[in-house]
Length: 534
Image 1 (cartoon, rainbow, N blue to C red):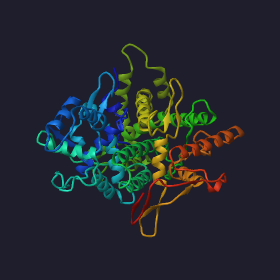
Image 2: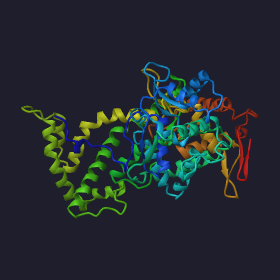
Image 3: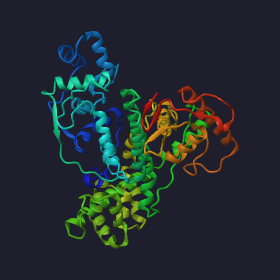
Image 4: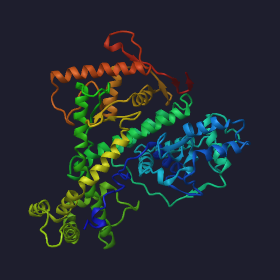
């Protein structure tokens, strides 16, 4: 007999909206689109396609000559399959359509729900941006909506007369396709959304700042490339946010300092297993992934405090906040001494049920559980310790898969890699580096806008450390590292040389001098606050 549902319930949206599963950023972005359109709510799609084959999408285009003129059948089928559709098992047995690629806003209406699940990552992104502490969130959500729903009237949902201007061919195809079948597939707003502020406001501020900078390039970077950049950026920030939570939440529950602890990740730039920099990156990843059990127990604590808060509201001992939901800082106040008696009574009411579920008829209680009972802890702590000990292994498996997916393991834009039967290690994939470079090369100017400027390699390395906690030519303070020895210094030099080589490979760096302070990264695109230029 297993634990009761109330006892094993783990997820709390105040910590994260994610249902920790392996997710795909195409589907996460597709899930974000209706929230942009409906101001935070999801949508109920009416007439959603189900198991529509690739050929039917191609046939719809070929039959709609008023919207698609002069399309060749064979080329159209290959174009739809390659450029317009999000497929599961692409090119393998079991290939099926999950929906349209999120190149345009209304792509979400054509997703197949059972194959296109964002697992809460869309909510996490939306509310992180919305609750950005600087107040810029609603404006940036509006900018994202304007970008994704380009060529569509925001009030009527129909194409504007100038829909063909400033929109690439794939996006225009999706706009036309939605108009062809708009009578068959439409949607309405789902139940009203309810958002929680992020536990780490600094991560939300950084996410919004980076989205602003990336959208600054939308006149120069091809739309499909910019969408890929956004997916990489969103995945990076979601992963970084949850890695920081793994350190931050246990500290907050233990009553530690309110200041956010610094977090550092050492990245293997060359991406070659078995090298000294790879060994350092493996140590860094091992240290961060080892924090999962403590984070899982801390999340259980928050969830059970939320259950306690709901109980206290029912009996009139606590008032629900004006927002209608208890944020994590409000729940953590229940750990204080003034609520000890309430915590104990709450835990004492649940502990017998837990122990009964864990004890087989006619057998003794598991020795590990018996040892926890013998520690003499207070009832609430005992309750948390027992349910966490039963559920950590289960949740660790899914949390590991979710983090791997957000870090784009072994995929373009990855921040983590793992060879077959090898250890995970933090890496810096070329596409992630390119996105971070596009952001770093933009500087504020006196007019209140942004413009591109060259940046020295050492300045960029310092920016990666200070802004994101990404370490390349230095070891992070703590986070699995202590004193730097001679072997580490040699590995750091090799890692820096690999970093410069990667900059050269992706076209942002040309050797002008061997002098350290004249190694300069140059912008690929030149932008000014008054306009843009290539």
